[in-house]
Image (cartoon, rainbow, N blue to C red):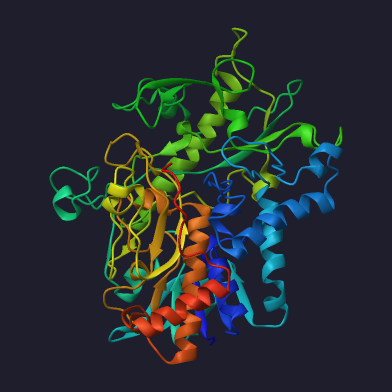
Length: 519
């Protein structure tokens, strides 16, 4: 199969890359390992993490169309209360993590609607349940990749002049011989204040999480079978944690001070149920939902005992299963042993909702992997480029900006046994140089695999930033095809760079921030 652009990985960045390339007239084949496109937004069940100004500015036009599409879906198909229907800033779940907490199935529908004109016309072909197995290269170029259908085992060779790696782990990089890094860099390498003292550690990566959805029916018992690894997780206490992982005690990421959580609102403690709540009964006509619904992506089910990448398959499967077992053990603990404010134990009415995540076991289709392989890029974004204490109070202004983003540097506990690194940062820009490998000429990253460090990945990995990266990647491929120029040539020739940035602006990509505060 051949197309103008081959996108491996149908996550958030892959979808926006496909949309931008097709919108600019290019044919696209996009593969996706799971049944659902959308990545963080859908198959990983993670509501959008966004910045304080998202309702007004600070994202691409197409990402805003996606957000508008979410609200329009609820208004079109769900029986909202009069107050909810009249709220222009409707937050379906009223979760505290985001201004737009929604069901992952709604995100999936909206993404398919956005891609529909190009899918129906044949300009975009989506191959779900396909995983990359190998690649053919010639010199500094990728010629083709081979993908395998996970249902039929049939293999397909995908050929193109340009390839985009939008996989969650940067899977195309090792198969193509593209130079990349993993894990935590050292201070001596990057000069970053929060990098590792001493030697770099390629295996020191953020923990990952297998998310799931629950609602709560207090008069019913929905206790799951005791998980196989429950005995281990029930007693597990990390050295750097103030209590057992399965407890209401965790740490405040910014200060590492102990903090006490609670399940439901009503006490002085932070409510974890409300944190990532995706359906608030109060927004809907009575009887629509039997209960409010939440997604569980909490400190208690972050898995950091090992990595699912850069290891052999047996170890990879061991860690993937470990993360699954941790999440199931958290649910079982919540149902049977979690202390309640009334002095009792357990909430057996917590009901696992496999329908919401589209699986039989009730866990998300794919784990939420926060950290990927990262290309060795023409330009690597460092903590110094966006630290809140930079002179002048603004982040680095790159001449080759292809978008913007904003989030705190937020690193979860790592496989190296380190606690949170959560520090303030300035609204930042996305340099084109971070999308260009130092050697390969026709492979572009489109998500967490760009030229960032272990530290700056902590703020470049969120939904609107990944969308912007993917959109820039798809637009870059289209521009290169139209003008017969390489991505490197676009960046390193002022005339071409200015022309490409004009194209991005015309497509609704914001390239500069106004002067605003750190987060």
